[in-house]
Image 1 (cartoon, one colour):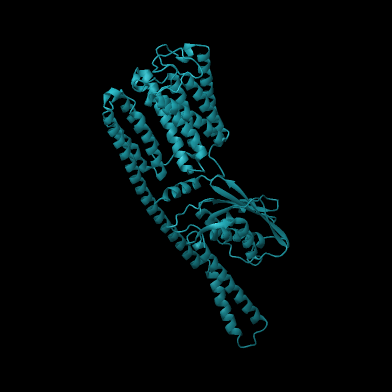
Image 2 (cartoon, rainbow, N blue to C red; image 1 turned 90 degrees about the vertical axis):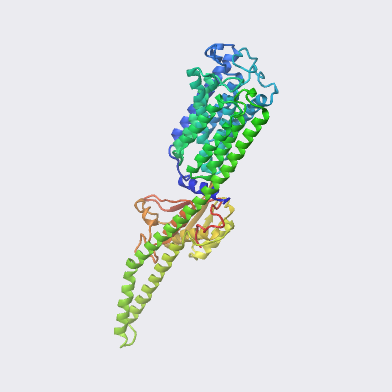
Length: 578
């Protein structure tokens, strides 16, 4: 069960391989534009504090001001968004961590009742309307900044600590939650409901602060929509639940067990196929349960009641989360087993079709040759009878090749195997020698080949078929085969290149089909199954393969993605080949 979440995330990430992105330019432009808007807002408000301009700091005299520290952290978050648009995820995570730590320190001052001296660290406050302490940002503002820091950091964590799908789920949900909290505050200002933008006795969120968070939240969510599309699940329902529950927190006293309501988003995560999504929702629910304890007047309930209420809520949230995750893992395993059975059945049907059609011609040939031999036995086996015997042996050999290739194809992707440490450089050389190419062919390995744990038999089979294909279809006595590798997040991209005649672009799809060969069988002996086997093994491992060969130019390159960490648990059938 423990590995099921990783399996689901790994398989989901294969749906959108690293070869392409849906709308990378639009995503980058939207992120950069949002970052610039937030930075501009931050500079404007900080200028208002320095020049002591209340119309910029407050907008309306009765509104809460955007504190200088709030504007400063907005600037840091805006720089984080710009860093994301440039692909500098590590730098974005640094900005996000800075914003989160500063916001957490401010929030701690409210929750624990002490003063760290950071509220007026940069500028002395001259406006304190609806402010608990001069210069101190609102607690709901601090919570939003913590969420923004999480959203900026999760892209960096992807590939090192968490899977791609988990990162995308966290990014979308975080963005929508930030936007939801901002909308609550904006609606509060429009309707005159102070409790919507202020928690208890603490500092209120400024109206332009809520607008800034609305921009950031929408940008974080749009990054996911533009690159991945919407997540598989009712995200809008989860966001609506959180927004409604948070709104209730603002009106109900602490003695009311509203914390239990945060079970609803966790239960809703059952409709999201990724087990890791449940943990994301549970973590967010935990944050809001803890922060919600301070959203009303402390006098509304005794401290012991608060602790019991919130403690039981947290216990219920995590017990429910574990239960939901286990159920999702069980269903995922069951569905995977059913899919495997369906796939095997399809292969058997395809095999039966091939056996009843494509093998008829060789069988008829054998039958005819048998009759010829019988007719010729009366004389000495010379001349034409001898030639017929040669034809017979050739047809039998071809039939055996077809049968072997069919069996190899049907087994590819579902034969048990072991995950073992592999030195790729050694494996490549050994596989090349096993193919037994002519002495005039040489192998060139470029770059630092990785050493990692993987399905050795499957990877070896892929290289073996690619090497054999390159040697078999070469049109010159001598040739060079080059192998290289690139590291791409969760994948290794291996490339096998030759200096042969190349393949016309119109045949790039055909060569991966069963029994397809671009040369007559009399010129090149083979079953036409090698590349079909390669494609099946690679895709069974969650990767993909592509060909690069242009018309009028020599040489062909096959590039395929191979997982850096094998996603199949030890207790399940191996997705690879023997």
